[in-house]
Length: 338
Ligand code: ATP
Ligand code: MG
Ligand code: FE
Image (cartoon, rainbow, N blue to C red):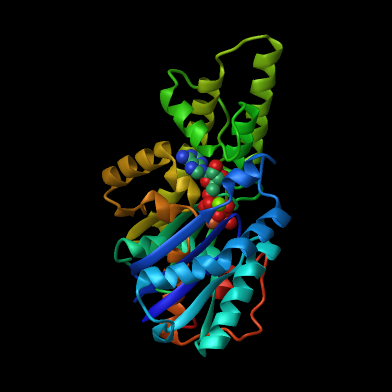
């Protein structure tokens, strides 16, 4: 099975060819970060235009690098949501045209199922499995009771972790996207500012980042008003410690409560060194099998979309040419029919 996959949900244009849901024959990624940096964040109209500029070439190149004649492709997969509607549409239109022209089935893919299945590109997944999704727009604990089923146990009630990192980074004077800068600064810090932890109600698997974000902004303002400098590392460290402590604790509790055989970390913030280290150490201590994809598969890419599409390929659940972009597509509804 050879799936040509397309991803255009945000600011990366990506195309990949995946064999049997696990083997990457090609995976091209064109990032628009440099373009959006000047605006301090992703500008939807600009993102759509950039996708249009590069999508055709990316598709051709992905197929060429894979060394598969287009007629031998088994299906065309594309991210249908969640994401920016205008950006998603570019990938969807391209995928539909190709599926129609080649007479191949079309598979609409949930972006977060893709992030989770980035793990499948590097190893077997054991069920039941627990996924901790930490990305620019999502913070979720997802239970996969069996292959292809997705149940959201908890999610953020306000900001996503990546979003909070970017806002904190901006308040410390870093350019967009600031997550990696905060991560680096936190690693170098010798002290940590004391900041709150958002545990929410006992037993809850939900997250909340907005209180912590406000606490950071207040602390920054106070340091500034007192005319102090050199406070940034301690803030970065304090913020990162608070985020990580809650993420790790809730993820471990979810694994235990559901009898999950494995914990899968995914999403752009899975690149965070503090989080990777803390989660690895804790999982080792608790004897929990942890999977973290290599960095290139943590941020948006089409290979992960091809890996998730394989679930639907196996069950023969194809999309029609009516497939629409869904800004807030439900992950649970995307589950493969039992
Ligand atoms: P979603 O998948 O929810 O639609 P997205 O695809 O835009 O969101 P990703 O590309 O998965 O998000 O991740 C981007 C986010 O990851 C940014 O917010 C970025 O700051 C953050 N990030 C990247 N590296 C790190 C790091 N080392 N530490 C913290 N955050 C990081
Ligand atoms: Mg991105
Ligand atoms: Fe993403």
